[in-house]
Length: 123
Length: 258
Image 1 (cartoon, chains in turn green, cyan):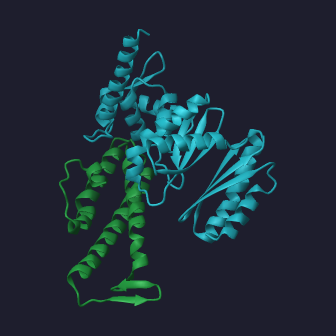
Image 2: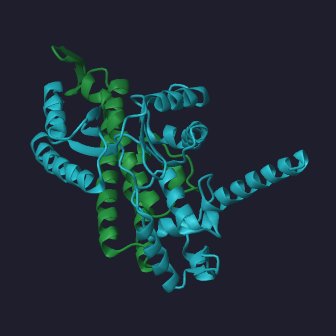
Image 3: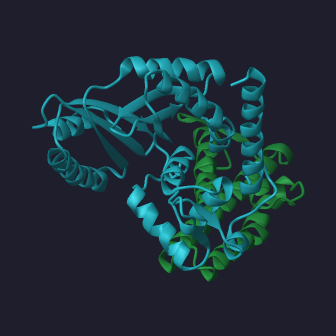
């Protein structure tokens, strides 16, 4: 997704993904939206709907990545935080394994939303 | 979703529709229902669709689930579908789980269901190969492939920017080819009349020009506004690849003396 939107984007570290998503990436997409509106290639209504979809998806994806990264750091570097075995499987810092297994699907949905906006802008 | 709920919904949708067969595709938060009705005219079809929409709206409100109903007139084409699935399996193994075909006057509308856990990037990488495989099977049956869509995914809408891009890739091009290209590239279905109106609007704004043969090209202003990029999917790259492919066909034909 990053590479497709910004071809010159260098490799980003895992920690920087949410920051880039909320910053450079979102700015680039919003600039593209403004340009398309200025050229009258999308209507005001389309612009607003695409903008809302974009802001929602990028922010949700950034939150998800941040949360997953924080949990990964706990799992790798904080041995004092223990995994808890309950009736619904094991959990770490209040997050169950079942919930974590859905992260990929959730991320795919958000990436799909962003790519949809990108494609509707003609890319 | 509970299977009993889906059964009730299917029953409500088929109630009163003559010789109706239902095929349900369920994905998390998303339900696609294909209704294969017996012979019926356009008015009956419209009535069935309107009734289905009312039922679906109520169901969506109660279940927090997105439902899409597609109506096909005539029998379902199981043999054609299994041929297509086999052809896809030979080209891209373990990508597509099921193919559903709706045969209309214009040709075949193909819907594919992907294996669980596959993302958009995987589909995008293999979409062209899948399309070619399906097209070959459809052509053998004397049918044209009208559209190719993935069950459970929302297709992106068609904006003026998308139309400019399609013209940039294929110019000089008529509206019918633009529509076909958009449908095969996974965009939302739009009737040719709507596309014609949009292209005319672009022509009035001076972004495209129409030739006496009824085909459209970009003007310098249109070329400046049309999307561009450096990647494999960029319109310029797609055009260059398309032209090169066409040239290789011509060279092969000349070599064969055709």
